[in-house]
Length: 157
Image (cartoon, rainbow, N blue to C red; front, side, top):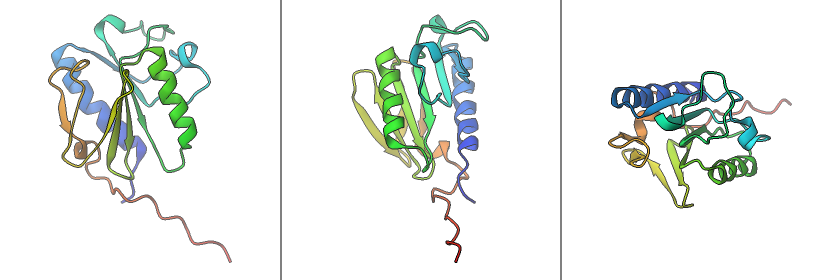
């Protein structure tokens, strides 16, 4: 089975929502257009996590950045565009950006201080300043997915 970015987003949403709501830390949001005024002109993230003090009203635009931005990166995403989005989110005040690569089975974590790390397999993904106590092996985000990129069809002769 080939990887499915939508399934990866759903898996992340399930893991984070269950933890964040049980602990009362905030809410995971599908951003829609509510952050366009903050960092317009770039690809919208797949998910954002907002701590309780930053949760916008339902459907309202906000000038307050999310605490955590989550993007699922596919082989067709352009590196330059994704890096621009990453930098704009951090410049706008996001505390962490997670870039998930289902086709590689890895996650790159970027922090507001511009440090980062690459995690894979049984490495634990945490965000202690945003979600205290949250700790999940990276492999859990990609469970059931093939980490091989889809094989393109042969060229037409």
